[in-house]
Length: 202
Image 1: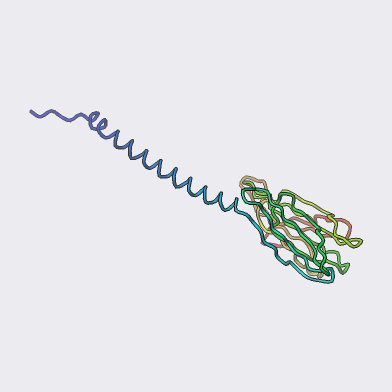
Image 2 (image 1 turned 180 degrees about the vertical axis):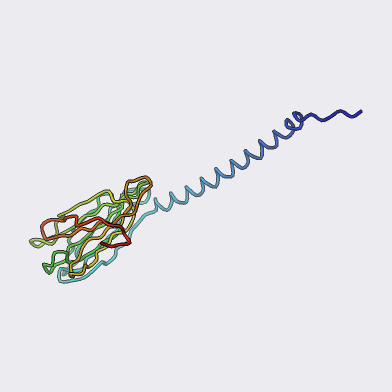
């Protein structure tokens, strides 16, 4: 009479094969993840060396130089003015990455302010903003704001023809919500005008 095959024996016979397949799958996933991370790391660590013209007016040519040494995380970006064969540095990023440069006359005095948007990096994808004002023949930093997560930054004109700083960002709520902050500059200080939903636009 044939003996019944024990379920325990079947399980024992299959366990080594299942374990091997699981290990192989885990190794493949690990290798693919390692390759992806290595490629991303190489892109981040690659050297950056480019110069871009942002704008040109009576003060000269506004230029952005993006600099990052190979193997370094910190950026050494800078803004400078070229005029009459002279170069004047007006802003240095000091490790931050300059993402946007937005020149505009915010206080209606006839000369452009310069809004500099920088990326701080990290998982929160934070932005830092700096406003430069032309005063007494040179640009000076008159405002700095940190902590906006992701989103976008723009200078928009309102119904009265005044330029304003508009920032779409994500709040710290759980889950995060979209919000829009609107700032105005009167020539002396930057003030928060209002916070609204992005779709309403204020």
